[in-house]
Image (cartoon, rainbow, N blue to C red; front, top):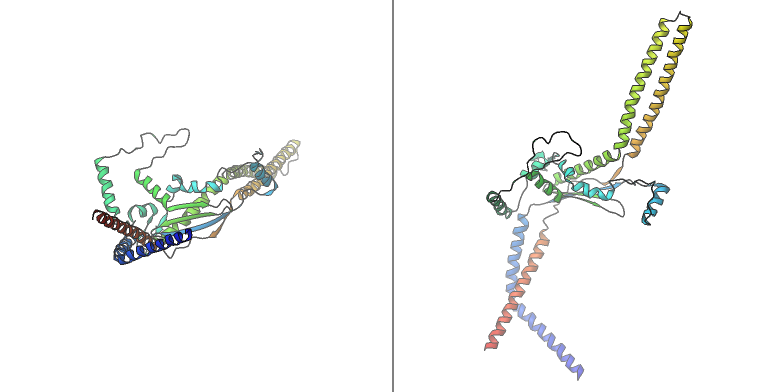
Length: 366
């Protein structure tokens, strides 16, 4: 008896499913209409959205820690032990995304010269973003609304006070206008830097409406990041090199002056054999020897300082260069169409459910 009841329930469920499928099939025109409207809307929206191209550059930096001491330091840090003799770099690879997205870094990209693939635009990157960007049609009413709100409710902009150019202690304060901040936010949304913590590989991606400009910005970002890290890591070594180089020039000049004095005195007193002349000759000769010894020592230190600059210079291997993309990254027309069709089917199903509920109510009243 129990088996028969279960079979009857299963049969009733299958019959209900069959009736439901038949009900939907007889009203398939609703789905067709909704899907057709969804396809048209998705095409209109997808073709209204400007194309966006993406260029990626892959970098592999050199390892900053090597050798037995670095390995022991790494193991000690994992165990929570701080080894005092180990110094860490302030700008590690993990901070590269923060550096790239900082306003100081992005402001340097404003003056990068860009040229469109059609050669109808040749200007700097800030002007290109401000005056040569395409927008979807629905953004124009939004822009008009914002301008109207700004006119009705103007906001006070922070202006640079008088006398800020005076010298003082600490870093100088920079003032950015609203347009500059808007451009910074726009570049931040188009520029990405991702670091793989396992392999240390750096991927820099630039998105833009023109394929050649996206490749130009990606390449400029890599060059500026490389210059930023190069300047930081070689700053102390370069300062030491410049100081020793100036000291080397002064000791060389002192050696040449001492040599000239000795030569001039020896030439004018070649026939003089007095004890005073011999003593003066010996003093000048000792001064030449001492000046040469000092110059030789400083010259050796200069070579060592130059070697330290080369040692501190980071090396980045470009795994994948900046190539001009052929196809656009967005908009994804098929994905947009699938989403619209899905929601159209949901709306059509809700309408059929409303029809079923309404028919049951009428039958209940009858």
